[in-house]
Amino acid sequence: MRDKYADKNAVITGGSSGIGFATAKLLVDGGARVVITGRSRTTLDAATERLGKNALAVRSDVASLPDLDALAARVRDELGTVEALFVNAGITTAMPFASTTEEMYDESFAINVKGAFFTVQKLAPLLSTGAGVVLTTSAANVMGMQDVSVYAAGKAALRSMARSFSRELLPRGIRVNAISPGPVDTGILENTMTKEAADRFKADRVAENPMQRFGTPEEIARAMAFLAFDATYTTGTEFVADGGITQL
Ligand SMILES: NC(=O)c1ccc[n+]([C@@H]2O[C@H](COP(=O)([O-])OP(=O)(O)OC[C@H]3O[C@@H](n4cnc5c(N)ncnc54)[C@H](OP(=O)(O)O)[C@@H]3O)[C@@H](O)[C@H]2O)c1
Image (cartoon, rainbow, N blue to C red):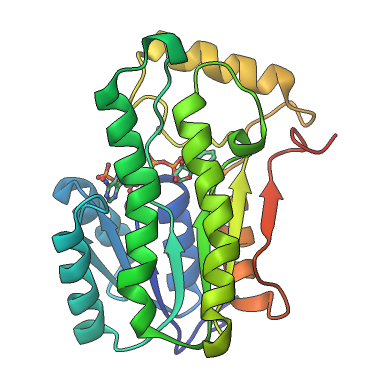
């Protein structure tokens, strides 16, 4: 809806593609000002080109605390206060646990877990009263799926953080919730798998899903915006948008 988010400021880590980009588009189309982040300048520039003048791209790696400090300073200068923070940047690591290396483990936890924790810590001072924080977990965090033990454990950590941060931010009237997407076709798999492995993984996800399909980034974006702005009596929860895979 036009102007639904007028006068709202949002920050979306990992807003340059996939679910984060779809959320940025939904909010900008509704009148919000949005800061998106990512590591690739090229992807960020392509995203802001499509989003228009109400989107600002900041190159920032969530695994780097200096980058997060710089992001917070930039957001303070550009937006002042923030009504919605989407802690969405993430990578997948698909590997049987027997062959997972220390390097893979550390990279996954540095981005998906440490990155999320310090994103909230560094940006919390800028959140306005009544603001909403949304952490992107995954259906994998409550499943025993093949080859994603490190990723799933990291997402389970995020689900836990949603509860703890909710408690600590309650006195400031800030709500913290998690969104748990099922399979969404965004390109995240191709970033870490060969095309054949990604195709096989996707075919398995469709076959096992009650809705027999992938979700779209736009479907997840609508749920994320709902949690951030509309779910005003909801904190510490995890909203499941997964075609029923963890529920039926
Ligand atoms: N797609 C799914 O099936 C699915 C299901 C459940 C949960 N999720 C979760 O949803 C979130 C978004 O995933 P997606 O599917 O939309 O993936 P995507 O299209 O690959 O987007 C990931 C975004 O995160 C950014 N990013 C990755 N590492 C980063 C880092 N270290 N610092 C800052 N930004 C970083 C990427 O940009 P750069 O690469 O340029 O940094 C990109 O903007 C992730 O947390 C993912 O785990 C996805």
